[in-house]
Every structure is written in structure tokens, then in C-alpha cells.
Length: 257
Length: 265
Image (cartoon, each protein chain N blue to C red):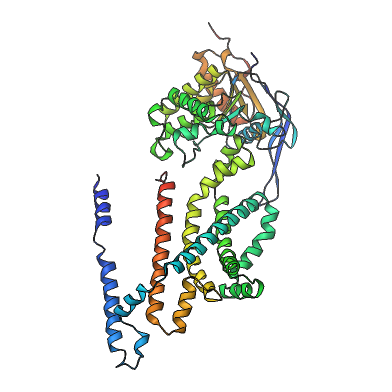
């Protein structure tokens, strides 16, 4: 093992001192603030102690976590399939790209809140509304990233592949898709974070299940402890999904130097 | 046994329009050339003389602007699919797919022609073994040296046992020892397969060492010389080299090329 490798492995195994210290500082500051809140004229419910937050954790309903997770994963899969399929069509047809590209840019410029309002006005079904908002926000990210990645496949490789006379399907299957896998993983990471934020907002409007709905209930009850607990669940969900994607990425991209 | 078909260019012209200036550039201007079955032909010329354009026309990735380029009675461009598994290429850089192991890279053309998986594997392994890569079949390209990667690229070309083998500066980027070794291997395998081989090169030593014929291109692929190497005794190779060099520099045939001494023995 080289000196560099020893150093890297030592870093990997090192105690996460900085992370723990910063978290500890935050917890202590919060706890001090929660004790001092009444003296500072802040209502006690605004900064609950960690004991209260821990109690709120006990009220977390797993079904809401599962529902939100299912919505996010389902919408991301649909967005991914639609995005990549459209990217392939746009890569194949220059004129299709010329017509669709401005439209995609336009869709990406629309704020999420506007999409939620459109969804509420257009669609009666709650699930469809949430799915629509997630797909319309995440789909274009997959599309643009995949299209850019396809265009970035080196000309030499495309030339080599064509010299062996693949069918269009083989060309995409054997060259373009594997070549854009690294970019696709980046899109997934970006979109997981985006989808977690968007689903929460979408669930605030009209949903009767999910983390967003529970956040809405907590807000109506003026329960900061509940909001804190549900927010931590969302953050944990995001980290878990990102870790899962990173694991698949490491496995699939093991060919990389 | 039917051999590979001849390659015939008749009045072949290829004009490109430059995207930036809009001007037309004549890459190949009315080329007439016939390459007989099983011949090994080296095409030499200076940079920008149209060698690579001719290479792309032979692959079928470009259409002639005028004239014809046929392999047998079919055009590699118009009858593109007909040549699947019949034409194979080796490029200047290995152009291996980074996410595929040596074995998977070598069997790529077999996957494209739809051979059963077991046969793909067996044939790819055979060729990798022949090229001395039996121990490295599971290695990814970044784990192999430049010479080994080019060997995988050669295995990928031979694995379909093509009628036509096209190599574009395939050994130019390797060190001289590795390049000489690979040239020798390539030539031996091409002859064993009974393939017609066309090598594009700017290295005269390579052209003289490999080709049955050396075709010298001037500007716009003007045919400056068509040399049958067998007519030149090895003792005169230095003269041949100088004459080709002089031809390329003057962009007109050197008189020494017209009077080769007959081969002795």
C-alpha cells in the first residue's frame, strides 16, 4: 500500500470529529435558546427542547413516510424514463430538438409553486396532482442532462461504433446509454434532493397523507417540535436515497479509474 | 471458396462544405483505384491529402459527392447493412469502450451481428488468446498498456473474420518496437483470414514493411504513384523510401518510381 493510499484509508476511518462538534454546538445552542426563550420574550413553543422533539419523534407515523417515499421514487422513475426517451428522440432528430428545446427551457423556468397551483386547478385527483408536479419539475432535468451527455460522447467512439454498423437500437444500447450513465447518476442525485423538496410542498396542498401533510398539520397545531421531527425525517430520507444511489453508482461505474 | 470482393473507386469525388466559412473543400478529386481481393495496400500521403476521407468512404460513413466507390457490386454507403460483419476497422487510438472489459470489447462486433452469447465469448477469447491477451480478458481498458489496448482493438476487428480490414494510422501512436510487433501480427492475421487489408499511414517504413502495394496520394487524393512492393528488391527499399518522400514533397511522381528494378529471387 502506497503512502497516499495509507493516508486516504486513514482519512476514511477517521473519527468524524468536525461533523460531531458542529452538531453538538448546534444542539447546545438550541437547548440554551429553548431555556432562555421565555426570558427573551419568545413563546416557549417556538423553540422546543430536544426532549419535546424526541417525544414528537415517537408520534412519527411510518405510513406517511412510506407514502412520501413511494411518491418520490415513483415520480423519479417516470421522470427518468420520459426524460431519457425524449432525450434519445431529440438526439436522433435535430429538428425535434430545435422545436422542443425552447419549450423544455420554458417549463424549467416556471416556479414550483405555479405548477402546484396549475395542478390544483387542472386535476381533481390528489395523487395525480403530486405526480404531475414532480414529473414536470424533475423530468426536464433528466432530459437536458441526458441530451447534453449524449452530445458529449466523443466523436471517435461514435465513429468507431458506426463503423461496425449497429442498428439504431444497438447504437443507443451499446454505446450511448452506457456512456451517459455517469451523467444519469448526477441527475438522479440532483433530482432526489429536488423531489424531496417539491413533494413536501405538493403534499401541503390537498394531500391527506405524506410528510408534507403532517407538516401542514403540525403547522396548524403550532407544534414546532413536530415540524422539527418531520423535517429531520425528510433529511434522513434524502440522505438514505442519496446513499442508495451512490452505492449503485459505485457498483455500476467500477470500470472508472 | 469465394474470397473478399474487390474495392473499386471510379471517378470518386468528395467535396465538403466548411461550416465556418461556407467554402467548398475538395477532399478527393476524381480518384480511380482498384484494390484486388486479399491485397494488403498501404495508402500514404501528407496530412490533409484525403486519406481519412477515403477511409470513411470505404467504411460507408460518408457518401461520395460524385463517382462511385463499390466493394464488389455494392456500395458501402448505400448498402450499409449488407456490410455488417464484413468490414472491420482499427483506428489510430484504440477507441475501446471504457466500461467494457477486454473480452466484452472484443466481442462487440459479434453482439452487433447477433451471434449466440456462447459463440461470441468463444470467438472473442480465441482472438484475445492469439493476440497474447489470454491473461487480461477481464481487465478494463484503463488497466492495460497502450500496446495491449491496441491488441484488443485488433482482436475486435478480426473477431468477425471480415472480408475487408481497414486500419487508419493504427500503429502510429505506439512506440517503434510495439508498433513493429503489432504490424507484423496484423499482417500475419490478415493473410491467415484471407482479408483484403487497407492501411492508411503517413509512415513510409510502415507502408513499405506491410503493403503488397503502396498507393501514394497527393493533394485531394490525387494518385501520384501505385507501387507494387514485390517489384522492388529489399536492397532498394532505401531508394524507394526516398522516391516516395520526394513524390510527396513535390506532389508529383518521382521518376525513380517508374523504373523499379526487378526483384531478384
